[in-house]
Image (cartoon, rainbow, N blue to C red; front, side, top):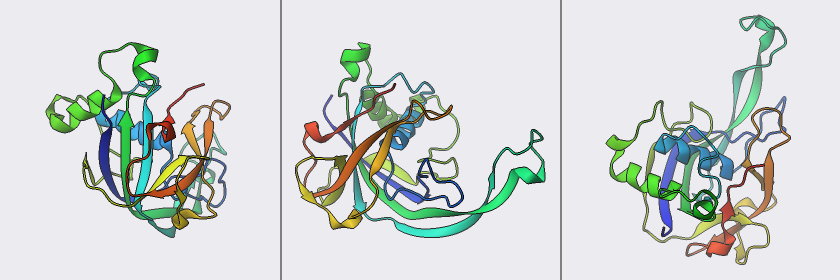
Length: 220
């Protein structure tokens, strides 16, 4: 499968850092695990393991705008779900005008699963014939409230800050200089022992990164 290049625009999003507690910080860019989950939702796939081995590259067309809101969060202090002690206000960082490019290809997926249809194949079909997809709910990037405004094939060339594995060749981009770019590529939703991270850097390129610079989705 040739590289699939997608433009994704999200008006409002939060990519919460996993160890943020009282003050809910956000990554400046969407983690690979978050983008992978969005693509699974797009094609109506509920099993995260089905397309393990797919490869992604994520690029920010422009930095998102960061702001801070106060919202009600829940922590289970009482077994009574409706108990007032379970709810409290906390500050949360949010991003506005998230504009990114996503590259997707089969990577190691076909060799691992030996299936006829890879995630890239299914995304291509879903965009061409959305009526053939059996799915539910809105398409979100992260939290369910963070609805995707548009997702479509993209063929235009522009300088993009690609979020690549640390040590990838290229020119460091000042857009995210000094920011924490240790991003999850797999999230363990029951505890955290199985969560996998990858050290990344932002590289500004006029063209797509080489395939060797991509990130492969791997599970424990």
